[in-house]
Image 1 (tube, rainbow, N blue to C red):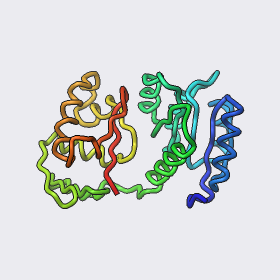
Image 2 (image 1 turned 60 degrees about the horizontal axis):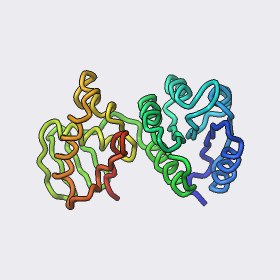
Image 3 (image 1 turned 135 degrees about the vertical axis):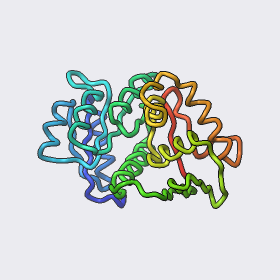
Length: 232
């Protein structure tokens, strides 16, 4: 049984078979479940039943998942996981930029979806307080005023932009960050159309952080962006 008892999840999909399967599977894990066949119905439900997390399809008639994300973000920070089909990389990027926290590609395993849900709920239940001067997450200890980084007690020397990039990723650990979001956050809005710039800095950062050639802390989400996994 999942330890997140009584956490409420709103499932939004116009395919009745998908909503039935998700309702059965998620209910068995201890979550409270409501379903909606589209974005407009989801927004109506949320007025009387605020969910702790939303799982929504992207392709739906009338109000689709993208528009739902935009509407929800005007009123709530509730985690949103979008369901997409293979080949919809551009749409997934739009959804993440519109406020979605993560995505799962159809067909997906229930184990993967449950893991993504648990991770999103953990992030959402973390302390909602001003950023602390020392960020400790996983294997990392980042002293922001001193601009000092320790990885498993090993000191790592970073350039100013590498440091800023790491801090932004660490503050959003486990969440998919699009190329556009990272460029805007670290280099400013005028840099969002220069993904090759980001690849260079991510490559440099990986070399300094990773103990081997295979990416461990910074995971590439093909065509979309990166996910920072700080370790246990």
